[in-house]
Image 1: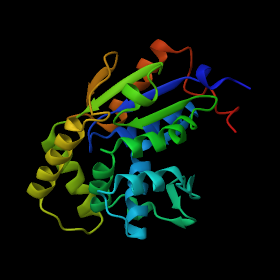
Image 2 (image 1 turned 45 degrees about the horizontal axis):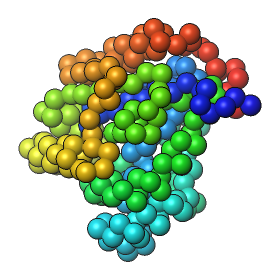
Image 3 (image 1 turned 180 degrees about the vertical axis):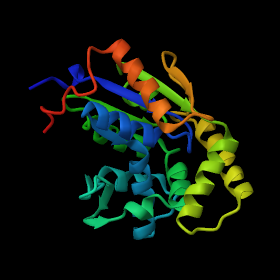
Length: 239
């Protein structure tokens, strides 16, 4: 069995709406590696708190929820994402705007982050892991082979989210989305525990005005520079 410390990790951190989740999924699929969507874990804590009537300011109760989180990730027949909480599929619920706000609120508490740390590190399994979030490179996987900090302007991130919601038939103000993104950026970057910031050895990548494919190829190119892997490596061996 390969020791966890020897399993390669690529981290993709960045602010909300930068596209890190999409890029991480594509990179992981291309390499045949495992994927960790750390933001989903905080969203799940917030959603579980809502289901149980726990206030988002109750750090001790939230940490208890995080420590006992019953979560499962899998895919549907078409390869689409499916996320389960306490045996119930909650994929759509955790992607809602309100749940995102809740995730940002619970993420400020050190006990919650500590409770989720072992869970996140447990995703590090052969042949490799692509982890996206806000502190993957600075806190969770400080020894990652490659650290990427993905950014985009607040205006572009708001436009992207506005289009996503419109495509789902949800009418929301672009100005309101822009304000929400700026507020979330401020909370994430100013929180006392694991604030949003690039690791000292991270490679900066601005996705503004660039296609998903172009950004994905850039990251894959960087991986090829630092690791002796090809895009098909690991697929046949993945279990």
